[in-house]
Length: 443
Ligand SMILES: *Cc1c(COP(=O)(O)O)cnc(C)c1O
Image 1 (cartoon, rainbow, N blue to C red):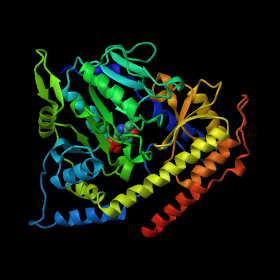
Image 2 (image 1 turned 45 degrees about the vertical axis):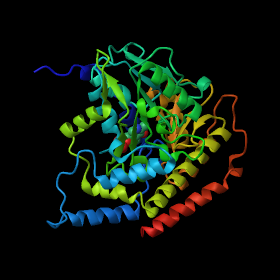
Image 3 (image 1 turned 90 degrees about the vertical axis):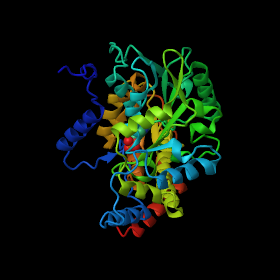
Image 4 (image 1 turned 180 degrees about the horizontal axis):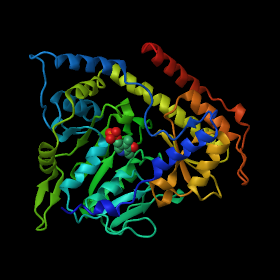
């Protein structure tokens, strides 16, 4: 048999393994190092008690013939689809119904698998820097073309995200078939405003583009003016699929559950120009290749829609956001250029005059014992940047920022203020919340 040669074309992603190797090397050389991980791309707070209890009950259901659950619906259980439709959409004035929603085992699977329902010849548009799954899964499906010397693929349209455009992709001049958009964005932490998102929806309607809208971080949006769903924009149901996850919102990274909205109004076309509802295609794909997310996990996710669940999500998010805000302020005061970190757990950081992400990574590692993620790993436009995350504990976040603020850089942008004067009040609240949470869980 012949292999899918697209896999050979795809270079290894060295980002996270190289970071891990460099941290390991540092620890080996400095056995007493008190390394603080500010590169964490995973949540750290535990699952809410109401979710844990719901899952315990679901396990017990499995133990007797009357309440046992075998194969569930491939689209997900109605109890969860309805809770999502009501709470995440209808109560916010968005007209999405339970049967537009497909429960998944996480957003990453669906972001990759959606490629099954559009043509192999589709031209893909992505923001650079961006979440690597969009490009890599497109390449695996044969939509990359050739890898160019600059590390980009010949058939993919890259939309540069730079300080000039506030790290937000500009609407391209040409049409593309499928556009990946992410807001709040991983890695830059930026968010689309209502006007910007409206321009994307208009672009998609004009060009018959399918938008795959990754809103894995929607729960981090605090500003009421910032849309949390693309369906807040008029006409979006005819052009957009929305992919969401309980991972970052509710600590489900290890439990695995998310959902994808494919509105019944959304159409694709064959070569003769005939219309087909994508809902039908995705339903067919899921029924064939997916046997549903676990009953136990779906019961756990359902508990997130109770008042206790809502409260638990809010507490987690408040802690991560307060960390991100702290990072943002501390890095700015220490003379860095800082983006994101306001409606997002991610802070995107640069030192003026330093164009090499790895050098900045090394300097902060060696002089502050703080780890970060080199921005270049997320795309060419990430060169010079590092990503810091709000997922560590408030205590560690504070300690890390204090250390980073003491690093000496030989550029003009020195710290603007004495850092010790900066110990802000908001974060005390976050620590209290954390204590409260650990106490409840009996830790
Ligand atoms: C973490 C992440 C996901 C994947 O989430 P899972 O549901 O855990 O698969 C998707 N998109 C972005 C941008 C992410 O950062």
